[in-house]
Length: 216
Image (cartoon, rainbow, N blue to C red; front, side, top):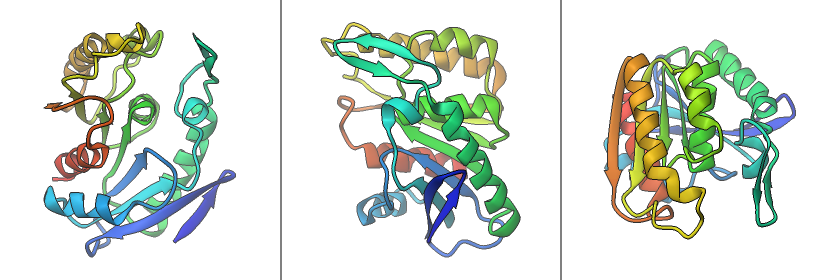
């Protein structure tokens, strides 16, 4: 089904046969309905029955970035995560009241992983999955030090993601390790996974592993 919250449309799908207490996962990746391939990956990772909410449409550089940054080379991030977060909060509130009063997790990939961790610092999620998250984002580590996350935290990163010509993004491994250390001081539990390959290798699998681990 598709529902609208604060001007944003969300796809709500079930995995398995979720019951009243089954978890809800807010998934911040590309827009649209989760694919059969992704759901098959969830099954392969042994995920329990759950609900998944994903945005119908998303502007990565706007909706998943916490503050404006001019990255140079003609690319600018407009920092619209707080506005997008209003829809996330409304979605979770309604879902908790009407469909699934169980645990709620937020999981994202790339800039979506950055946004998931950002929302974890501002909202009462039971846990967060940051898969290949853009921890290189300017001023992110400084922000996280001042706003450490709670709950269960899952972080993953591909071993070759640092091998890029982009100077800013090449700092991702170092920044991710700093993010991990900050989380370990504040969170209920922290799970870290080294993934093979670069940034674009098996995003569905990385998301599925995060969801499965958090929802166990």
